[in-house]
Length: 367
Length: 208
Image (cartoon, rainbow over all chains, first blue to last red; front, side):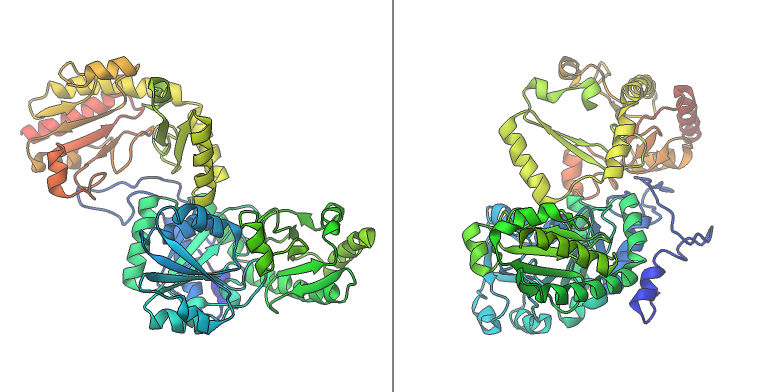
């Protein structure tokens, strides 16, 4: 399987998988257990936590889209990160980009730090400094790019030079760009992680996480913990995610078009001091002039919804200070730029004029 | 046992865990786990980890478990009643060297079981002296599905040595009494006579 263009592969996910009926849309296999013909015999499926035919379609699909060897579907993005983290042990050190999702920071600082893993934060800009953070105990580099919520773009190839030179695993959270815009494994990463709840699912109706890795030994290790921990994605959620992924290319195109229009609009607006947009994708952040405006603005939006997620067809606006990044200490947040004037916008696929009108009317009430 | 038959928190336990894939769901159609505590601080700690790890149950799966729970009481009563009958029946058969079921008079744990539970449960294990006999039995019964897992409306026959305990080293397994001749039966909701006739047929074939 595999066509030259990603959008073809996305649309075809699950088709031609059921020879018996010819079903275009793949069946959902709910069965938790699978009958064995006899002792030591198996159809390849034994227990749904270990392997499920519906989930396999998704796992093979994302592995192919990312250019990896194996995919693993988990019950959430955080479950995907937790499954990968299970490979590390007491004494290990991990270098992490400073700007990252608050939930990841929380799992590292309030979870894994207590279990003996230490984390060193890198500014995501100074590649010489990255090498200086490596010690004999460093095992991995974990980055998001673009970062959440400051949209900092980290050069995966340059980071992978450091990871390869020092024999470290490079783990990239590819949630914001998806394989359509960025394929980290081809740039030297070892593991890609997704909160598939976001763009891949795209409809704000399913929580899911995905892991893709390259290399047989690494894939076996992840498979062991994927099954051992059991945070695997259910068949119905796997099916919902496949359903969402079929339109990813169309959605992403419109997300990006809209985001570019809104970027220009916000840049030229007197209420806005900075717009952070990586020139690709559907996510942007901006700082308003006055911190006092934040709450009235959030209450004023009629079309854009004030909520804590991203990547869906509906536009969502998020206040990182109290929502996604609340678990990062305030002093630290302020220091690297997640200030109290910052808003993050996940641009949906509504008509761009309606979006602009909504932002205009909201700003007009505070100016 | 499920809370229908046994409530560990009332007996001084701090945390109760379930593979809700089993009896609570009960229909071989959903993989789920549950943890229950009654201490507020312990609950807050678990809630933090539950959210941070993100290994949460999907909404459709939550609904499927809820759907299963509605018939839990009647399922547990029927399955454990049938299990009791089957355990006693197997215990009388010469082909079988040992039956493990808390409801048997010979079961060493019976007294403890009866103090803390209101039933002997719906799962039992039984042992043939040779691996070949277990294999023959598995190949010649028709009704119970030979698979991993347990606690379903369908009776499930498992071979612990290669299935549920396959990841345990052989020595360790045998030390615990999980021999190569041991089979585990999770009794479902089929008519008990149909199950017994099926077993009888397989055992008689073995004898001949």
